[in-house]
Image 1 (cartoon, rainbow, N blue to C red):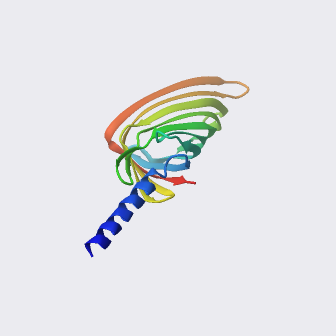
Image 2 (image 1 turned 135 degrees about the vertical axis):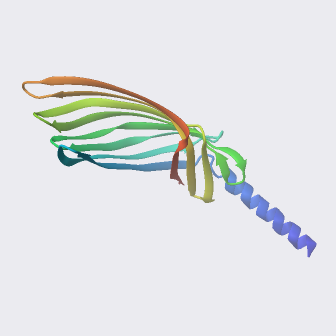
Image 3 (image 1 turned 180 degrees about the vertical axis):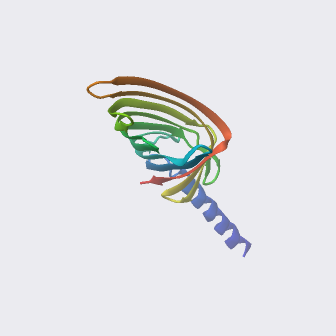
Length: 207
């Protein structure tokens, strides 16, 4: 009986070892969906109440291959949309461009990995702004996002759940708005870093 138990334990450990090593040379697919919706209502004593709605959505898809040292580089695209509606002001932009994700899986124990990653995107922006005049928007958006506290759990041979705690982000947007009579240019640089107020959940698929 002890012999059977020992053989079973050995087979089980061997299976876990093979399962955890199956990351090497696997193709990896990563997708992300982000949605932000803010709606505010303002009430003033001597004016009618009004509301403002700000919507942001982003979709990305990346594909790569895991190397022998469990690192990877994935290439893909990012598609984003932005809409702001406030009283007589309205703006809407769409962005599209290439994206790169660099990461590494560092095994903590079987099927559980420390997986820091970085994302780089560069997207073209087009849209329209309506206020006292209608302006056509064109520009670029580039960003760097670093997730130093990211963890992955391999729940199945081809499916891995990802959780990130904290993020450092650098974002730059250049936008030119113009019509036949007017032109304006804006530069927007955002730097954000936190460990406690940002949590993301995602999934990797291996093939």
